[in-house]
Length: 336
Picture 1 (cartoon, helix red, strand yellow):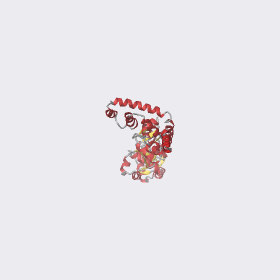
Picture 2 (cartoon, helix red, strand yellow; picture 1 turned 90 degrees about the horizontal axis):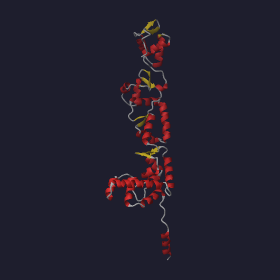
Picture 3 (cartoon, one colour; picture 1 turned 30 degrees about the vertical axis):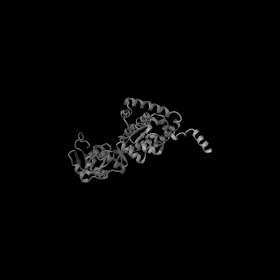
Picture 4 (cartoon, helix red, strand yellow; picture 1 turned 180 degrees about the vertical axis):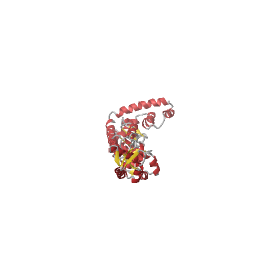
């Protein structure tokens, strides 16, 4: 008799409320008829079947299925904003906000917010499949999620990484931008790859970086001028490729000696060739200069040989008077 009474009491109790947001959503889905459950799972949640395919299964048109999809989407959005769903939706959204400040890999967000991987009872979908309904304003693009359009973030990252500013300034700007995105370590490397970029010698370059791009990174890392052969070994490419790539015509670089380059942002004395420097010294001395002083200056600053300087000084554009040198025709001679 007591056992029968206990069974009667248990039967009279209301059914336990489903646990968590996934359970609540499962109860909402369970109230739908079979066709609407299929439309919910395969069109609203997972979008893995064509409307026409589902329509043929139930003997209706694809347009009928699409209309039902729109109605279900509107009903679901409204239901998520009301009790009892509103509070758990807000809790999951807060967790996602902490996991994704601006942009993050979806897998990482799902690890930090495990509710996203919870299956919705009665379906093959999980909460993450409904992120568009749960998190208005969230954008998904391949493996990435962001609170701004992912394509725009990719473009902005590439612009900062390749801005036409000195390498040190560019690195600082990109470092600040990375912090603003909330990415670090392997996530940052994966994001760079997604943007068509890669890290090289402490600088970020395009995935298809040119030799001058790579040379800039090598010099920025070394912090001092390097011979083209040394730069080539660091990239690595054959030396002739660095010699022929036109560093001397690129505003990012400054030739500091014969076959030696530094970054223009360092402000080092630029080597413009022996002839050009002789003309420069003559102009700086008021129209004539002591040749031995010119030779000492060129040898000391740029490491050229004395014989080379004396050979250029015998050129037709120069006139010699004892130890002094001047321009043979001051109106036509110009630095190289």
